Image (cartoon, rainbow, N blue to C red; front, side, top):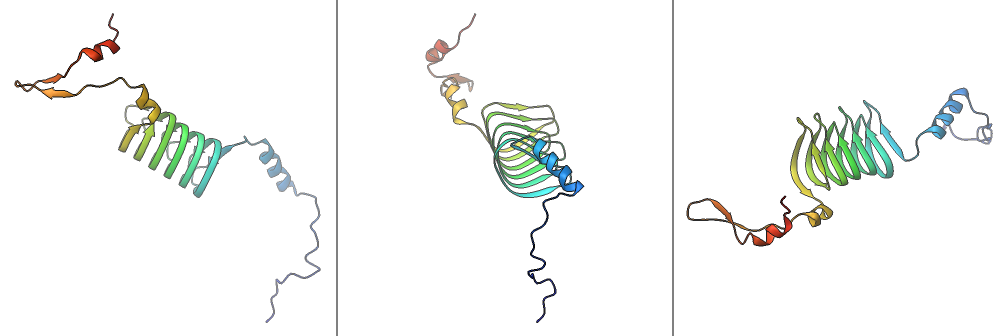
Length: 172
């Protein structure tokens, strides 16, 4: 059988080291790009895993996992999968799981659905959050102690032994 594209000694010669104009322009852009930045453009669909990013901006679609310092999902952008970050600003859509160790901010066009962990949570008017939502362990340690509530005979809730909690409140 004859293979017309079979490598031969003649076509295996090393390519010259000169770059075309387009290759040179692309090389310059790659050198000047922000290190540690992931940018998924509008209309682009990516499937995969990104780790140790500094900033990740999603205008298009990511199906997978991302670990970054700052995650920005722009309006029209979406992430289906898992995100671990310090700061997240969501104007688009996130379906899956997110753990924001510092701040999770859901803008007025943002939609988050899934398992959500956060240290601080900000939801703008119009933003939507749905799923299993819980503060991370650091936030829980900073919470004030709570006391059990019981219903009295007149069906009005009353706090049992409220004296210890008054020590934590500083009223002026």
